[in-house]
Image 1 (cartoon, rainbow, N blue to C red):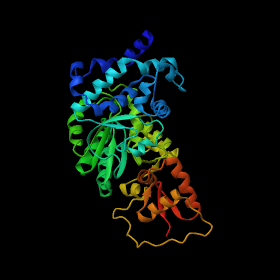
Image 2 (cartoon, rainbow, N blue to C red):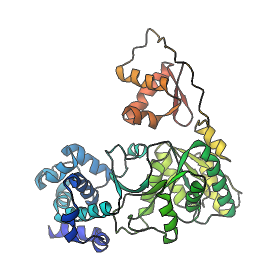
Image 3 (cartoon, rainbow, N blue to C red):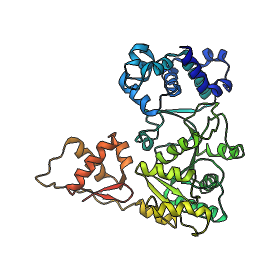
Image 4 (spheres, rainbow, N blue to C red):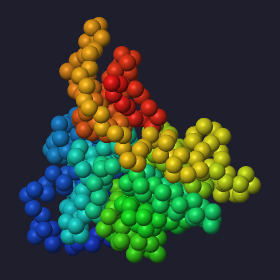
Amino acid sequence: MNCIFRTVMLILPRTMIHAIIPNKTIPEVLKSDDESLKYQIALSLVPGIGPVLAKNLVSYCGGVREVFNRSKIQLERIPGIGPERAGMIRHSIIMKRAEEELVFIRKYGIKSLFYLDKAYPQRLSHCVDAPILMYFKGDCDLNAGRFIAVVGTRHATSYGREVTEKTIADLAAFGVTIVSGLAYGIDIIAHRAAMEAGLGTVAVTAHGLDRIYPSLHKCTAEKMTMKGGVLSEYISGTMPDRENFPARNRIVAGMCDATIVVESAQRGGALITADIANSYNRDVFAFPGRIHDAFSQGCLSLVKENKAMLVCSADDIAKALNWDIEGPLKKPEKSVQLNIFTSLSEEEQRILNRLRESKLLHIDELALSLSVPLGKLSSILLRLEFEGLIRALPGKRFEFVS
């Protein structure tokens, strides 16, 4: 157990040093309805247990609280756990730190988003490595409307600034929410352009919400919480360490319908985000630049390698995603005569009815509205398409065939 204790202390030193709320305040602030959240936080803090294993634990044990109620011997028998991880789960320092964090988020009005909550970004929840718990400061429904990631180099040129501002201003007609990383360059330009256009904008950080990095962007982040906000998977006291940024990028890519890369060198965080978006089967767009410009090389490579679609305007993006500013004219509902050889299950009929009564729907919107797992929904949609009952369109949208 001493070995386990040393391991935990090595992994969690900053959070213990930078705890904002003294231990003595914990009993005064905690409420009985915070118990579930305390266990959720604790699970996210266990060293050596990432999102995939944590979700398996919850499923295997039948709940988050039940994970911590299991004996060490019982935990050891769960696939992927073993004696060391079981010892860490049972260690008191984990629960103590969770209580401290619970006090912190309650004091500062921070929202918690557990992966089983309805408020958790549903687009992101379909990604296998999505965080089990995130923290959000702001005012924004992370599941409402269209979400677009805008990323690029920290060394934005005047061309990159112009393209970013013009594109976001034009995307305002589509009511999008802009997501980026609050970094220097394209990120902060995108956030500010979104606010200027009256759009919501969300920053995903690589540190806890007790700080803003870079500190120069603190005022912008505060303004963003009025219509948008700041999102993180990290507890207070977590520093913006180098390894946190690639992990942050998966959230940016996963919670959005598409990712736009404005400017990027041959290597950089924007290309990591684009690669992750591709792995999630999300649309990626890249703006071209002059072939000899250093900060156009990343975008050109994405296009050459068929990892991104070349776009020159917001209109190109809207067409690729099958958006319509005014929305399609509502047609009178028709009764559909199915082929006599077509036999639909109750769930297939429910999906078909949802598409019939709606405008064009993205697969994520359809999955969210019907509470159908994305994998299962994809196979059902494919069958309905084969039957000629629906039509698949670019941008992972589907429409009912009248």
